[in-house]
Image (cartoon, rainbow, N blue to C red; front, top):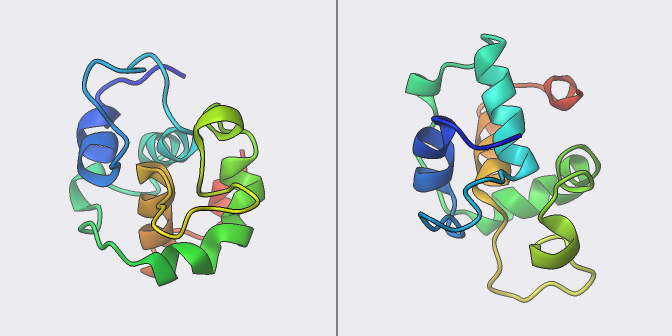
Length: 116
């Protein structure tokens, strides 16, 4: 799925990897899922939680989200250190993963919402 207006409300504010003009024809799987949840009306793009950089939150959902979000992500094979076998200590996931973790942690979505 190509990025569209969601790069403004997902990628730019949540993703440390987002660079204007680079790979803009691609989106991480997490961003695609958030966009789908917005289009389904399950979440409101205007009311997304504020960015909270908290690695314990990301680690808590690494396994739960790994199969649903990360396995099919186009960035995982070459660009994803977060799901690597031996990740660097200072890594962080993509903005889509961060936002989904925040939404789930705040009980705004359920694990079942991440399916399809």
